[in-house]
Amino acid sequence: MYSAISKSAPLLARGPSFSTTAMASISRITVIGGGQMGSGIAQVAATHKHEVTLVDVSQEALDRGKAYMAKSLKRVAKKKHAEDEAAQSQFVAEIMSRVSLSTKPQEAVSRADLVIEAIVENLKVKQDLFAQLSKAAPQQAILASNTSSLPIGKIAELLDSQRKQRFIGLHFFNPVPQMKLVEVVRTKEADQEVVDSAVAWVKAIGKAPAVCKDTPGFIVNRLLLPYMMEAIRLLERDVASAQDIDTAMKLGAGYPMGPFELCDYVGLDTIKFIVDGWHKDGEGLKGNPLFASSTKLDELVKQGRLGVKSGKGFYDY
Ligand SMILES: NC(=O)c1ccc[n+]([C@@H]2O[C@H](COP(=O)([O-])OP(=O)(O)OC[C@H]3O[C@@H](n4cnc5c(N)ncnc54)[C@H](O)[C@@H]3O)[C@@H](O)[C@H]2O)c1
Image (cartoon, rainbow, N blue to C red):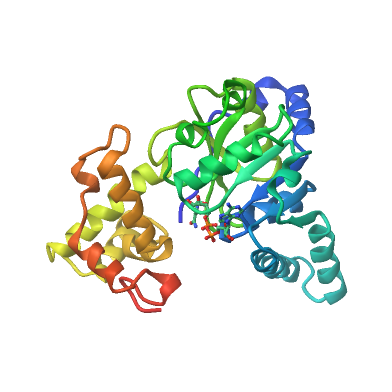
């Protein structure tokens, strides 16, 4: 996929004292949802010496999240300590020792500086979770959602105005350990100090922040979704094969993946879910033909051809 570098560099502009203060205030992180994204966020935060609590609905889900992290860290350890198995194990164990697991969200956020939610992409479920968390998290804690497609302001809708000032989007990219970018999404209500602290923290965990307003798709997906949908429409109109379109964009535009490789990687059900939602009632996007449904996409999703995760999509894996 793609990465982007923030050009604003607010930390450098403000000097080291700001960075120390902001970073010192975020050291205990609670990540809610230990799936693909949550476990990656927990791994990266723990690698950068933060105390992390990972929360999920069951011990089984937590064990799965822990296994993702351990597997990913082992790969890093093998590169770092090529011939030294003891050093590899120590590297993994040291990072994992900073990660606690919990099935009790309220208890897990009670001492958190930053709470990042990465649970199922469902507005009501996210709203209810934050309503619950706001009863237990410290008043100064920053609350954040990693949603890809839901408005951050809507997720915070049930919270009081003080909480809304400390609520932002922190949109990581998949796979989290490899992808440099984090979109820091600023709602109308969010305090500048909260955005600055989040930017500083993103840098402190080795990522590159890009700050943007709370609008559908933020930056990356707002540009990528029309691109992927237009590629699907080229295929529907039989302009070229999927392979030729991918080759054209890789070699002609210098993209690391062609649009169909990208669609399969993201998941065709995910793409359909996002564009259908935006077309139906996305702020400023409702009825926009860029996001109209596509027969080809609908058919593939119906057939269970969801991309890499199901073994078949535009391509077979
Ligand atoms: N997968 C991606 O490429 C990607 C990229 C960026 C952002 N996101 C966003 O990140 C979020 C998570 O996506 P994912 O791909 O990691 O999903 P996933 O299905 O891999 O993981 C979700 C996890 O959340 C847990 N969960 C569900 N409800 C919960 C609750 N109420 N409390 C605690 N845990 C709960 C599930 O048990 C599961 O382990 C979504 O909002 C998604 O839009 C996904």
